[in-house]
Length: 117
Image (tube, rainbow, N blue to C red; front, side, top):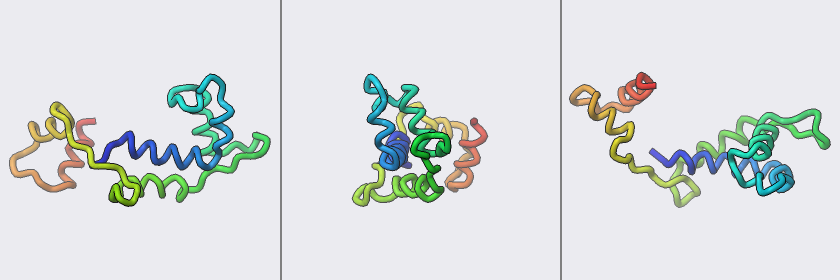
């Protein structure tokens, strides 16, 4: 289990590296502010592409998006994200409370997590 914000950050860094001028051209530091309209516009325009932009922005390939995502789950010594420790009151605690005794299979834990959503 790794830190989700670290995984997200890995993907966002790859997207930003693909089209850095978009983020640096955002007004009022919006290019560094995740919920800002300009930041989100750059993110989606770079991911999905924009054929009407000048110059045109080609969409990122599946590999360009997936590679940093998958790498985030690798060892921290190779750029992966650090392990996340479940906090008290977390989903792990909820699973432990409601899971049947003897549950130790990853598939079962995933099924329980998905059923809680």
